[in-house]
Image (cartoon, rainbow, N blue to C red; front, side, top):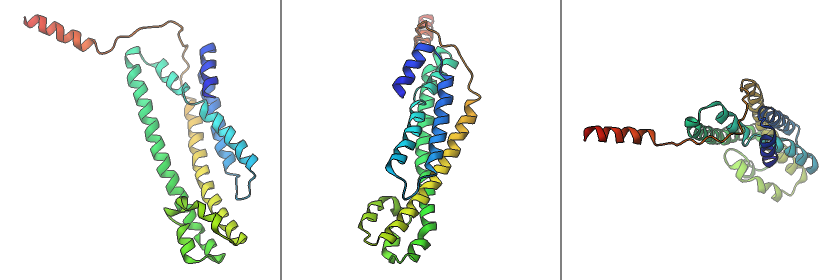
Length: 209
């Protein structure tokens, strides 16, 4: 999708519609994740991931192009670095927030695990910060009913994450309305950076001489 997006922008010079489409697909894809449960078929999971993945793929480059189109050539480097910083910061925050939401969701399902007859050491392994790391322990549970209860607990906790990401993606859709449209120029403009201060220093040195 990132390659297709680049070809479309190169041929048409339009990026705003691509941003809107990407955000809508990402919102819809994350919203579809909410319907996943412990018994969801693999085909359904892959289908939902394709929708969300296509949306994310359309958002790799267009936001950067939109920013660069709105600033002067002198500010292009600053704009690019700022977007990279914001994206890295958002990625870090999403990992932290997602982990907190997941852990709290698992903690709320612990009474259901205990009611299913799981021993204390097993419920402890599937709680708190250890829940995500011990997901493979589900395969070691022999009782099918108890295994299903654990799977449902994980699915319920993940559902809370999908609700959060869907809301955040929808905020992106709303924010995209305020992106201004700009015509991309086909003319190459060369900008020399880092020379202005040097020229000033040369003038000062020559003046002192």
